[in-house]
Length: 174
Image 1 (cartoon, rainbow, N blue to C red):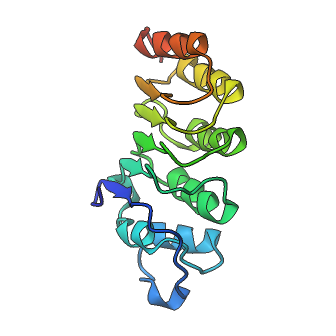
Image 2 (tube, rainbow, N blue to C red):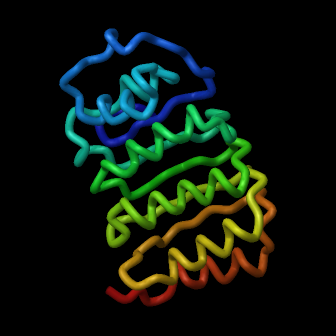
């Protein structure tokens, strides 16, 4: 799923390209390059970044196996922080640990338009209670309109998942 509104890629591994091979006029590409000191660790993601940050609405990293590699997740977080209309992220099946998932949630909570954010998918990752508690706090917070959280095949207790889903379905205040 690659396009103007979606940046994503399959499990192709990380590829290192020189910065001078990148377009200098793309704002999100500049953000990415600044976060990686000029190296492109995944050319599919890098090349799918749109010129206009406001057109990026969905990030799909399902089964990309970014795991907990700082050089992979940090540029993604920087790009997310610059996308005002981002409303969905899919990090399913990436072997993310709690620390990495919490960094993603922190970015969503601090930088993304929470009133427009709708979907978070951490399915198939070994995340547990700390991520569940952070998700519950996020979806329960005033001004948050997240309506779809997927935690299938995670270590988040079913009772906590049920509370998260209940908060997603509940009335959200502005």
